Image 1 (cartoon, one colour):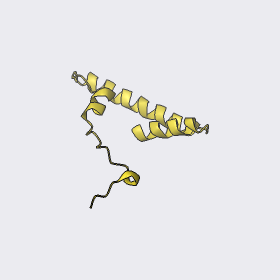
Image 2 (spheres, one colour):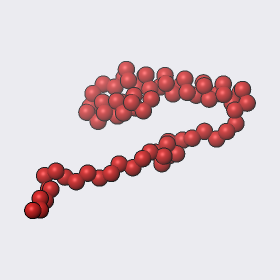
Image 3 (cartoon, one colour):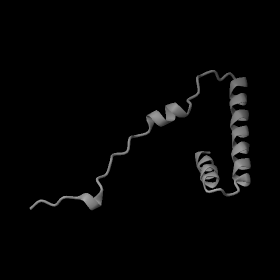
Image 4 (cartoon, one colour):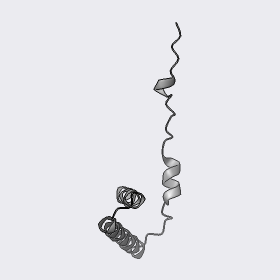
Length: 74
């Protein structure tokens, strides 16, 4: 789903038609909402993670030094 959202954002940023991808994204959101509804109807009651939880759990990327600014010492 994140890939589809990124594709829609990219198409919008470039001024391209994103109708097909946006419809795909809405379809995926509908499916997720249906699955969550079924889960709750079956007795599911836990708090579901949101985007902020997922981002917080990602490993941080280390900053890589700019190769053009490498200083060689001899």
